[in-house]
Image 1 (cartoon, rainbow, N blue to C red):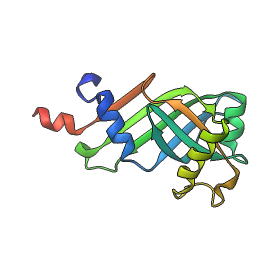
Image 2 (cartoon, one colour):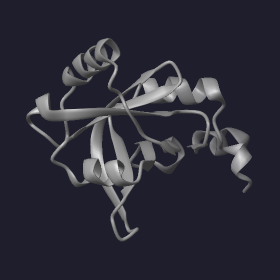
Image 3 (cartoon, rainbow, N blue to C red):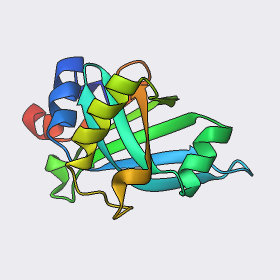
Length: 144
């Protein structure tokens, strides 16, 4: 089945991402192997912002090589309800005082799946729509 049949439009992607609470962040380890962590996130405009602890392996990986993949998925089955987005990009640390504080405060309001103390987290962002793959399996069911 062609991927286009189950892909989401940019508006569908934005609506889906806004409604989700969990992001899986994939980074590259020093030896090039993949590494992943859960992270809190939010969508602001067309950028995905996420926070990770500065003491984490993901933080060290991004500081060395900022290529990442952010996976936001809704599951588990039933099969025809699976939806997801994989956004690839180069993570940019948010250091602008005003924006960083505002985003950090909004992220701090969420339960962090990794760190109980969100105070030592670094905030990064990537573009949502520049290099994205999406899937909505309910579109398969609607075709039949």
